[in-house]
Amino acid sequence: VQLQASGGGLVQPGGSLRLSCAASGSIFSIDDMGWYRQAPGKQRELVGNISSGGSTNYADSVKGRFTISRDNAKNTAYLQMNNLKPEDTAVYYCNAYVFSGKTYEAYWGQGTQVTVSS
Image 1: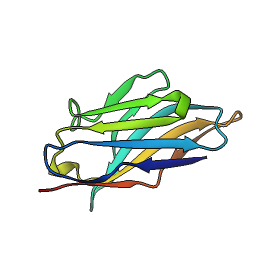
Image 2: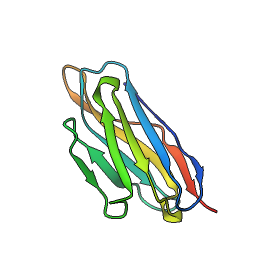
Image 3: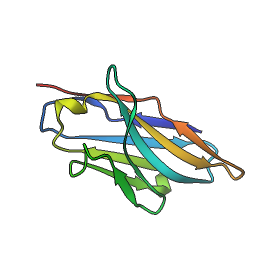
């Protein structure tokens, strides 16, 4: 199973970006999918996650600005980021709990850089 994250880049404060995380490989089903981020010199933190049924959970720092969605038919999760702030600058990683038909395992994407700067 592989997770491919994409959509990062450089954006000005107040701007928007949309990240995608596509899962591929031997997948029977996917449970929770999540987004994490890690800024330089800081620990990786949860941005938010989404269940297979579409229930979402967000960190307080992004509530009202970020929205997580998913397309189960495409095994893809999205992170819509609006009103971006310099403190949102980080490498963003996606995570998914994948059921192969026998066991659940957690997988990580390779990370995509988001830089918010004027």
